[in-house]
Length: 297
Image (cartoon, rainbow, N blue to C red; front, side):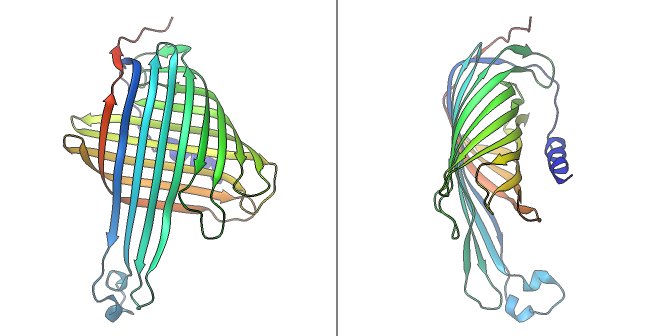
């Protein structure tokens, strides 16, 4: 029941549009985003107000800082798309307790993901959901982190996917359903894991200089070759941002990032929610040529 609820919330939170698309041809190389995400709570004289009923007077000082790097290199052809992405995220939370206890610093996100993906275009759909291509795809991914968690080794996972994808759309950048194989060598011995996964990424230009970006995925684990307390039953992620161009390639955006996972061996959904402001810079180093999309035959 929880799996169905998480999946439905992910899909319902994404908008739907009906327009036509323009196709691309050739290489596109771009830094989609390098950003600094911030949120902060500062309370003055909080220790003096301990015991007051209004928690805004007695809360701990907190500051959250996250860095986000997203690089894309893709080759667009009439028959498909070969895409390569590097995503890096790192952030820390700093808490200054109002009772005078030592300051606490902890990681709130730490992730490096390198992905290469090829999708074959078998059908082109026009004038529906912004237009898109449809076909099978395969990809390979390496998932790791900058520093290991306190209680575990550095995360190291090789992941492969294969399935069906909607892609190259004006709005739907990708929407896929896939089988997943994972080789998880974070711990010794390594584990061979199998899962089913669906995900979506949507972009919409609200008006000139204002762009909304939405994304999400849901991964349901089917089997694990090694039974460990750290095995997951499922995991899901959602993200949304509204970039407003300030000048040239610099933008500011409200950001929401949500991650949830359920352990296989005990109840209680683990959740991580970040809501803040992002200051980012992006640049297209080489843009693919726009071409007329041929209608499906």
